[in-house]
Image (tube, rainbow, N blue to C red; front, side, top):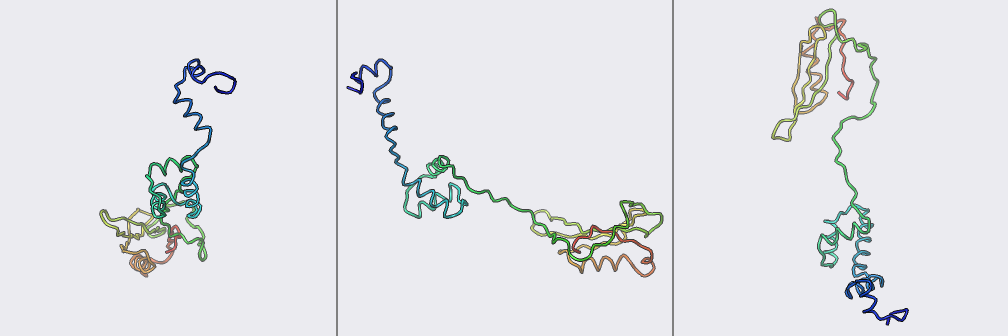
Length: 189
């Protein structure tokens, strides 16, 4: 007899439910959680490592602490608990150091054409990655604004002040130096 005075088999037949389904649902209502201990351990490891552990590292840590558990179970429990690893984004290298020193006035004002040779010259340092290598090369050319000719250039393994000095000494000798405007992006070189 179930509450209400009816027999269980009569109620199940009327509702067209299997006996196993009834007992399964009854067990679910009791709230027995066989993974309760594992869930608390996962939450403590997660907070201990400030949310940096995903399910793979979490599984290894739980195994180190004596729990024999499959990574798929850890992944499923972490999803139920709403825990996910913090994604660390890889940052692209930037040599920008902020505003250092005095900034030169922009004399060119985007008027790049020149009326005569060596009136306006432009320079910049460009980085080239060598294929199948971790090494990089740095090119520092000087371009004449009159005919877009490269007056001088320097190729180096590191972008330093010595490279830029050598390029400037090569480009600007005594006879070409007077009344020449040299324009750059005013990077750290």
